[in-house]
Length: 216
Image (cartoon, rainbow, N blue to C red; front, side):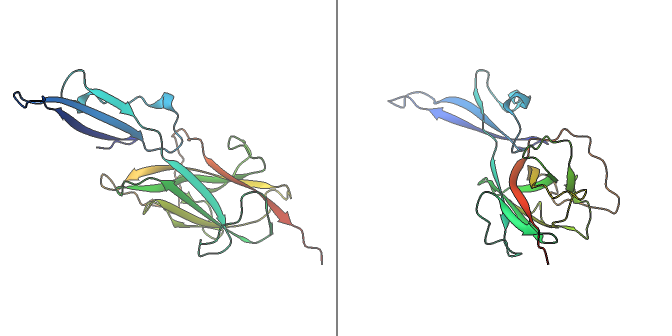
């Protein structure tokens, strides 16, 4: 069972007596897993009691799925750059891939927001959005290659100066897991983007990316 924020797994454990002379005792239990990969434990305000059939049943909360983001060297998304600083010339294409450590085939990963900053902090207020509300902010410069179809997501973006500044940049992405059995997970993007009214989750980060200043 899933809702907009969590996936809930329920089952029962039967305990039999040693001599099998009585009916087994039944213990129902549930586990709740958040769909947002970076949601904090304090926000798990989910009522799971309706899913339990007996009073006194056990329940637990699982940890969010882990996510990783990589900068790749080509459009095949097969060879990532080593961790650390990457230096690229202005106008290069950035090939970014995100993967989530989840094994349940019902879930797919959806990119919510991806943006660049001049600091390593995802909370930096000076942001240049590449993807916002699940959609590209500029289709000529940013292409969402995959989102909402598997446990991987990919996009490409042109590397250009933000406000004419040659400082290093960092890329940040927030994402969530979507239950494709319960709803359509593929983002629908129109010519006019809608503003998001949801609270952003803590994103994952890669960088720094440095500019290669070529002097002719």
